[in-house]
View 1 (cartoon, rainbow, N blue to C red):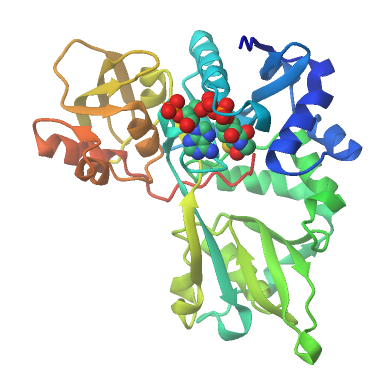
View 2: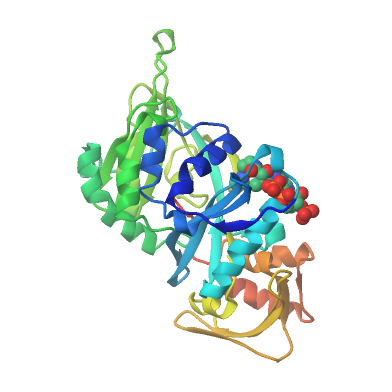
Length: 399
Ligand SMILES: CC(C)(COP(=O)(O)OP(=O)(O)OC[C@H]1O[C@@H](n2cnc3c(N)ncnc32)[C@H](O)[C@@H]1OP(=O)(O)O)[C@@H](O)C(=O)NCCC(=O)NCCS
């Protein structure tokens, strides 16, 4: 069957949304689609068509992503879906090839995405570069060892928060590898706080500190006289130890709340280190966060900095765009990366490079898994240490 792929336009979007909703198991309401279109440029989307019918889609949002020591402009691939009656005939593969080829032609250094399922994107050269966890804690069993300054925290309405939190988010983002920027339109959308954004919970509440903020929703549970509401943390943006202890002082004092839960508390968050019982800060699930697909290796590797001085040749095996060898010289203050004919010290595929790029995954572990080659293990070990970031990467924005 001939399924041509073309760029979408605004007139396609009702049908695109119908397909995307059906693929993910919901229907867009009029409001939801109008709101979604405030951050969407339909011309950044590709669609697969069977006659008049739209049967597949992929699109992106433009982001700036923090990388260790720098930042990179990357498309965040989104709205990927193929009609249930057209699946497993290679339509996703065609869409991915078209989109990635288009990025290459535009000189895009790398693409990113978050995956609905873990088994889909490795074959297209995406590697999982950060992890998210679900944190659960019983508020009544946890105390800060050294109380934080609750008086430094203000409870703000959504309208007040909308004015103040973008600047705090920018400060947090600058210190967090993987963190994504939010445009004004993006902030406006999040702060609409419509019913469909609430997932059966309350509207947003905001706690603000000069150096951080937390937003949360409450799901009430009066527990037959033993109140145990759920506090679901939506945004967790904390840029200093003072903000951390002050915001947790307030969160742990939310009477009537039983459990605090979130997907946003980073894996290396200091919370277990500042409470009376670290075991109460439970990790219920760890999964992949953001995936990175290298496209212009010299551009992406020279955009970040490295933990130690480095002079090495990397060969990147790329089934879609052909293999390449790159001479990477870098350190904490500068980096250059250029194509080269010199012999490779370290050989890895595009997905493996994507997964170590933000400094949160270990090249050493990939080598033990047989996914990284090289004659001299000391060269792999040095690159491994050079790639590591000071912090766990966190993308922080669902897309
Ligand atoms: C995921 C989805 C887009 C796949 O579309 P598709 O057109 O059926 O995919 P293709 O036929 O092009 O498959 C390409 C390859 O991916 C594999 N694949 C497809 N869906 C997969 C899945 N859910 N899990 C693992 N592998 C998958 C295929 O087996 C095929 O493998 P190959 O390397 O042997 O060729 C489609 O099933 C879908 O819309 N799912 C629901 C929405 C969703 O989860 N979208 C992804 C959002 S991140």
